[in-house]
Length: 139
Length: 469
Image (cartoon, rainbow over all chains, first blue to last red; front, side):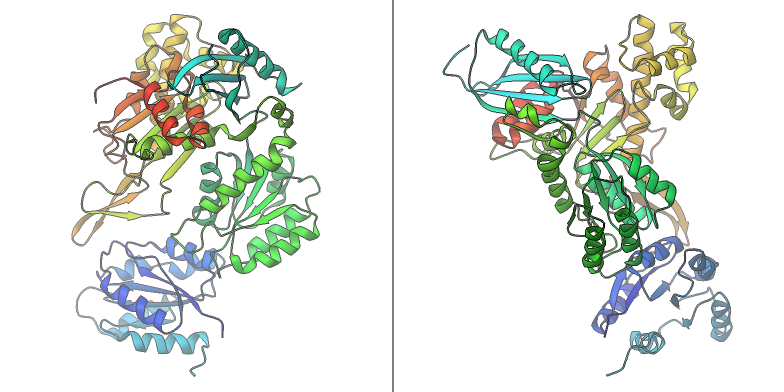
């Protein structure tokens, strides 16, 4: 089975890296080929890395609460760059304040993300979903 | 002349002049030096033989040379095109690898090559092509398709160095072979995002230069008189820079440094420095910087691009410095551009030359040094560093005509410095300035291949200190 390639990072002006490192380790242990471009990453850098590595998925983390602004137009930018087909996942502290997660999820789905996760989601759930979505056999 | 002394003869085949310097290898003294107009068009050895005759005159007879080595930037230098996938990633990595090997880059190409770009490559008189694209195991369609296009270019005879996605290399090799293209497969210049691997490519370029390019350029017959043309001239300067910075076998170097080299066609800066942040709180981003970094500014040549320098640096800069000289700026500048070999004839010319050199230096260092960008997050400003932080550099060395022959090398070198007016440009704050007044760096680089300690001592002896920092 060919290794699935993913690009991950923390979007925007956001210094938080702990979750990013945990997620990276979990993905590697599950057999993914991970390109982690760290924190303070802008959309264009996710996309450039995805092109060079021919990644199947982009995993966007955000903790500072500006995710909604930072992620606007992300899918369109991928389409423009010739990678409109790429699987896009976002998770973390997506918005500021207490908001109903279903509403938040819907807004990010509308932006073109395929999976949206709330704060505190376990890496194993993200990975199980990712395997399903990318068609990785479970044996 | 003494029969007991060991001499080293070091030649540099430049596009304009063939220079020769003779060293006493025991006392590390420059015994003689000369230069003759290069004769690349007819027979490269004409100028060389004349220069060697000059040296014989100086010595008063014939001696044996322990080393008899040369560099070359003649016949257009080592002309290369760099091809990658994403402009800021593999295309930039390919460009840096080629520059670090002393090449003269004629074009940097990204994504699928277009017909117009292929025409440029075919007609560019290239010596080598560097083909990259995709990280290892990453994207491979583009490099394969670009290889197919290059394979079909009937007029392209330059060897192709393939340093892209490893997974694609077999197919790329087959495609190039089917088109009868000489090629070498080597390690990816960017095996993973944010990892730059330029050493293998640099070695292969050097190897091809010695084995193929010297002959292709008609320089081979010089080896009747010279043991070996070892490397392109910029590569010798890079070798000298590295040696001077790091030291050798118990002989201490000068520490991390930069070399500014102003020429008629380009302004080059080399830095041998890690460039890590010199203050806490900076976040480093962007493509990692090579420890030995060379930038070549093809739009900042003192002659060929005199008017571009005025445009890039801004007329105001020149008004201040040359108003008093009573020159018509544009007329004077275009006179320089029309006559690239011209030397300053009047005081006004000298003033303009100085202003051009200062402007070229300021802009070239601005492009070479890293910078800080400020962005604002929920907890206030965040400072992001792109490129090298050179603020802690202790040494800056000047080379090239305007510095060596001009009246005020220190004034030009000061343009490399950190400025409070532009605090986000990470230039050296308080370095010691040196001048390569004897044009010795290339010889230091050549000798470093044979006897690094002597080469280092030679460099330290002949670099002239200009200030006390």
